[in-house]
Structure formats: structure tokens, C-alpha cells
Amino acid sequence: MRLEIEHVGKQYGGKVWGLRDFNLTLGPGVQGLLGPNGAGKSTLMRILATVTRPTEGRVTWDGVDIARMPNELRAVLGYLPQDFGVYPNLNALEFLEYMAAIKGLDGGSARKRIDELIQILNLFEARKRPLGGYSGGMKQRVGIAQALLNDPQLLIVDEPTAGLDPEERVRFRNLLSDLSGERIVILSTHIVSDVEVTATQITLIRQGRLLMNATPEALLQAVAGKVWEWTVSSTELTALKQRHLISSTMRLTDGVRIRSIAGEPPASQALPASPRLEDAYLYLIANGQNGRPA
Image (tube, rainbow, N blue to C red; front, side, top):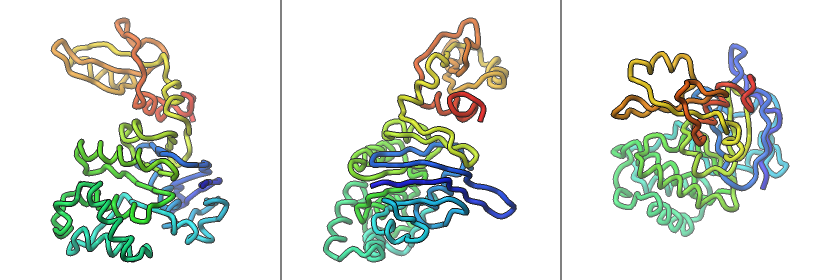
């Protein structure tokens, strides 16, 4: 299986481009799509899910243009959009049975698959309650279940952990890892930790353009020797944030522990630190591919 994105662009009214000249080839595994809000991630996801057409370029699934023959992909597609909605008067079982019918699953296979997903996603106790009474996290789990009904070869999830508590987020990450064998999973998010433990490849997107596509190890290598830590007083913090690229802060009894990304030590007391994926993400988004302005 192979998904190819070739020179894809999407233009909206007012000559605003949501995507521009985007190129990427995907194979089996978890592909993390990482970028700030408004970077174009959801636009790309809607194109890949055949919800909208690109203004320019094309996307092919095993060589088939999905804009011209969308059903070739839709038959093997699972999609959880960012703005997923439910029918509030249906319970989880009824809703998933309805979605299974839309996807063309036969009754016996659908019931078996729904039972499996209800258990996997920890919805068993609430399966007969109307969806209108579900929390945001529970609705998101139902959305994940409907995306998995047809055991898709291509699974697209857009900001899937929104509304999930920490335990549910860990459960979902583990589920994605389990699913990533012989299928393509695209996880679009602005939360670095969501892709850190699951993605085999990470794509950085900024202002509608591909910034970098690499393994997590390669992204970490981009900031090797550029991460520093030191402790400052609380009164110094605001000024330091204006002068330096700060990836994290931690309040301690003797002040605030600063983590910063820079080519040279940003302070005389700064000590080198092991890079994290969030450091690499912030550095590359701020400076461009491989640290060069884009």
C-alpha cells in the first residue's frame, strides 16, 4: 500500500492558500503530522480523506487518483475528523451499527467488530446511554471506534486526543501503536507527546508547506548540542522568554529551571541537556528545515 501526495495545494477565497506544493510519500506505519494550529494539517487531512479536492496537484492510493476515483480509497479508509459529531439521541451501539451500515458491513461482522471496539475503547458500561450525555472524551472514543469499524488500511485521525484525560490519551497511543502493523496511520496533532511515542515518521508542517519529514531520531539529531538548562529567579523569566527560545520551565525551590534551544550557551551558567522531540519541534518550526530560515 502506498499513498503519494504530489505538489498538492489548496486555495480558499481571497487567494489564501491553506496548502502549497506539498509532497509526501507514505507507507505502512504511524505518520505523525505535527504543526501549530492553522498550519494546514486539517486541510491536508480532508484532502486525503476525499472530503475536499485539492486546487492543484494530486493524491494517489496505490497509483489511483483519489479525486477521480474516490471510492477506491473510501473502501479501505477510516477517518476521525477534528470536528467529529454524533447523533445525541442514539446510544453508542446504535450509532456504531448505523455507521457500520453506511460503510457496507454485513450485520454479523458489524456486531462482532462493534463488541470488540466497545471493549477496547472502554465504552462497555456506557454503551446503552444516549450519546448526548457523553463527556467530550467519551464522544471522542466513539469517534475512534467508528473510524476503526471497517479495519481500514488507511486510518486518518485529526487531533484525536482532544478532550481525553491522561489515562485515555495513553490508552489511545497504545491502540495506535498496536494498529500500525500492515496499515498506514496518519496522526495529525499539535501535541508533540501524542506522536513522540507512536510515530515511525514525523512530518513537520508550517504555513501550509512541508518543513521536514524524518524519523524521530533524525529530528532529535537536528538539535543535538543546542539544548541548554539553567536556573533563574522568577523575576528574570519574562525577559528571558523575549530573548531566547524556551521549550519548557519548571519551578523549583531555588527558582525556575529553564530549558532553552540555541546554537551557543545562552547564559554563563547554562549546561548542555539531552534533546527531546519537543525541543526539535520548536526549533525547526521557529527556524525552518534543519535550522535554516524557510
